[in-house]
Length: 248
Ligand code: PEP
Image (tube, rainbow, N blue to C red; front, side, top):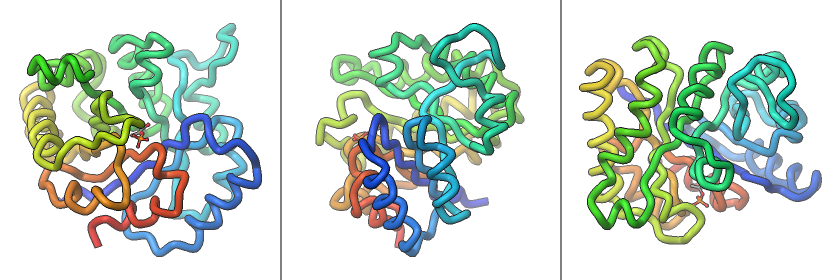
């Protein structure tokens, strides 16, 4: 079965006002969209955004904890997201790994808990510039995934979208070339084939993130192992609609 193109918008700690949020929503509600579209606003806006977005567009939290409840100030649990009708969560974003010191083991625990709580997961992995320059890209992505593989069953993978996001490309304006993205996505798929199963490797969507914009999305989208995008900065602009429709 062909993998359905998937585009996520990671709003990060934006927008800064309810008015901006409404403008973004109006744009998405009016657009003609082909693909699976999921937008991830700050936690505070998840429910109001879900209420005003049209039904085909889903919402994702940008993070969750791995416990269902308890004394974990500032955290949100998978059970709470589920209860609020939020279907997706982004986990392992490089900003979480770097700024908030989330290890691959923590990301794996969160992934397991999110799936156990019936959420779908956009699982982010990717290498730093130094790791790419020393030819460690495939190895780093494999190690980040292995921590997750260790905790999941084969069936769990049907609810995971992998976002390959080279750290050097996130928010920098330096996009991976189509050839670089394709080569790494193919390595990630090969890893899944060996570490999980050929069926999971074939079915799992691997999306690219890192300075995707209106100008570069079409070429990236033609690569056989690029199944969509996770978009940061450009998801806050009208060009997000062009990125969603990159395969048209
Ligand atoms: C991201 O934050 O996931 C991202 C890919 O950001 P940007 O598109 O701004 O590089």
